[in-house]
Image (cartoon, rainbow, N blue to C red; front, side):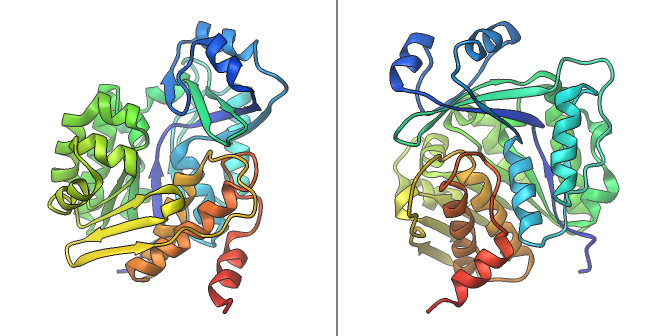
Length: 330
């Protein structure tokens, strides 16, 4: 089936503030290492005031995936909410300059554009404190029917599955995609999201999702069991599940079987921010170009390895050339 886009991604439009920190600072701030926590504007300002010099870049999980697909040469669109403020303008410029179609109108009367403070410890683990601001004000009216209907896959970011209107937007997008004969993918995003939304995530998977992306912790939290049992359980709910496992690579489960692909070598592990997002980018790009599960996973692994070798959640090299050279190497 012809398509105008490979992927339409829906998620939080966030500006990331990345800072290298030592572990004692996490304890002083009272934050739990290695997870994402939602904070209000006051708490966000308080944490920001304690950070060392930081790098500010456009982020957001699904937006990172969209950026990765664009770097691979894919046709991709993004739906997410920003305010018409300075950070909102920065976010829009960053994303569209990469070649991502971003049709969502900026909000005039809303909370400020979202920001996420990402504290990276020396072991490269990231601890995120997120103020969602304007991005939670996404509504069904923001779902671009032409974009969704014209995309092979609509990719939904689990982080956004919170407010009722955002849920309605997801369900509208899924219905439009399936009506057009397209696929719907969901990222579980974080164990925090799974714990908050386990029951509704299970319903979403069973009734509206064809492909699911998760890491090992997220999938085992969803099914409250070990990895082997979780992989068996998810097969009954979706057509395909891609599960990342850090240094152990990734495992892809389909109705027809299971494929495990080793992790790509990383010369220097710097920052794991965006690893899952870029894995999804590589996987979805290969998937929408007709590749088999093993090659999809390999492509995802190559993209993830690139992004964890430097600070920040967006690729710093041309992923199309990187994937081509890596796959052609003997």
